[in-house]
Image (tube, rainbow, N blue to C red; front, side, top):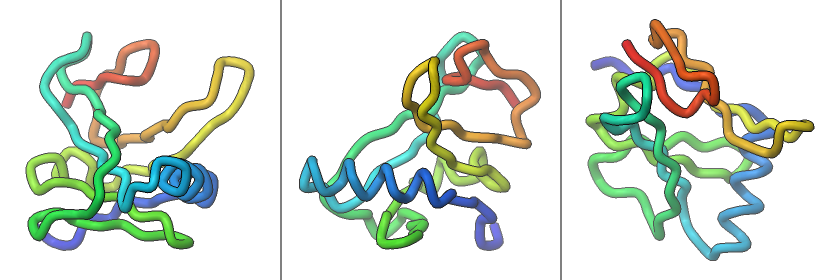
Length: 109
């Protein structure tokens, strides 16, 4: 697989930096797992460091690690952070998804 084309927005990077500093973590890990009401779901976690098999995205010092199994599901995605009346959350705009649940946490391909 060629290098992934995944965008980390400035808002997401700013929020990730704040979380990593507060939790004294090295990277935010984003993974895709089976489950959720639409078939797959996004999982966000904190880790001390990326592993050798991870792809690491970096913007303004914020580091996101994505494991090899999740990478194809996230290619061409935009990772953003929103803070509005509905709450503060990371949002993944995934052009590969053919359907998504109403809350945006799970999707199908």
